[in-house]
Length: 312
Ligand SMILES: Nc1ncnc2c1ncn2[C@@H]1O[C@H](COP(=O)(O)OP(=O)(O)OP(=O)(O)O)[C@@H](O)[C@H]1O
Ligand SMILES: [Mg+2]
Image (cartoon, rainbow, N blue to C red; front, side, top):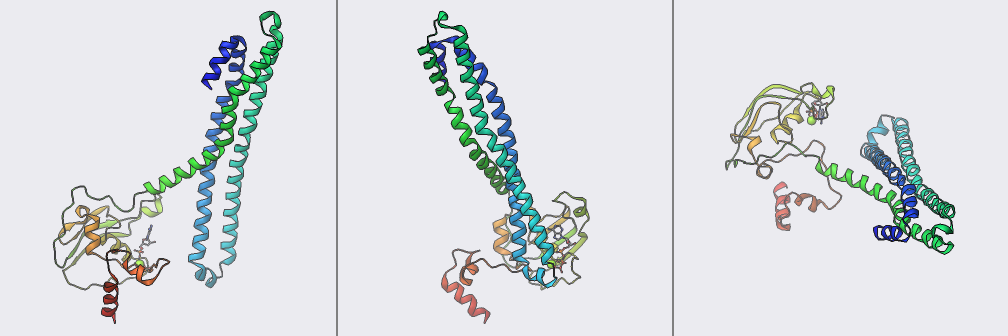
């Protein structure tokens, strides 16, 4: 583009100035459209994720939904999600559709201005009909990359929006931050010491989750001791298990395992010593054998068989 611009100036600087001035606002137009396009594609991706979440929830809870006769409620909710997603997609499509014509409009305007100026200056100024045709050809060459750019920009902006979403999901921290200078857990059976713990789920930032789920909890489990937490639904049993397995950190107080504050224990160290069996068991879509070894890829077939033998 730069080389063509230099050739244009060398060919006839007056026509070149006209071509540059008339096509310059296109850069501004493209920038504005591009900004709106990224925003529209980002929104479209978000709505797509919302829809997938809704559908995923229906698949996971289909029995509950049917048992409570809530099929219509979920159906209308999903239809609404589909509508919102379609609207976001159409908006992105409409903005994208502006790109190509805006490039074409500016190209036509630029060529028309060049021809108009050439005719106005007349042969007296040294611009012959042949030179003018040659310059028009140059102007098209000059604007060609912009036309190509407008053709691909829609797809690239959609990809950029997708990439940003993937990165933001990958960047979401999972669980509390690991200590940079971890302390090793002692060998042998470990005790658990929960001291003055207060915890609320306030990570989502809404007021509703600011209410503490656990308040000033003290609990001492000796090594080898068997303990069961009993309480009404929602009283915080799972939350206490999450604190002990450090899936969350308390806002006040400390949780120690084997005498070490969990904030100082390396995740891998803790996971190799502490096993969590979740309330809702989750099986990956593969064989039972592979489900058994996924936490320990080094486990052999004999290990799996031995485990089953032990359970018999
Ligand atoms: N991820 C979360 N975000 C926000 N609030 C949560 C979250 N998980 C649980 N809660 C809330 O914390 C409280 C305690 O929940 P928890 O799951 O610990 O109870 P529970 O005793 O295990 O109940 P259940 O017997 O039903 O398993 C409840 O009010 C619940 O709504
Ligand atoms: Mg629970």
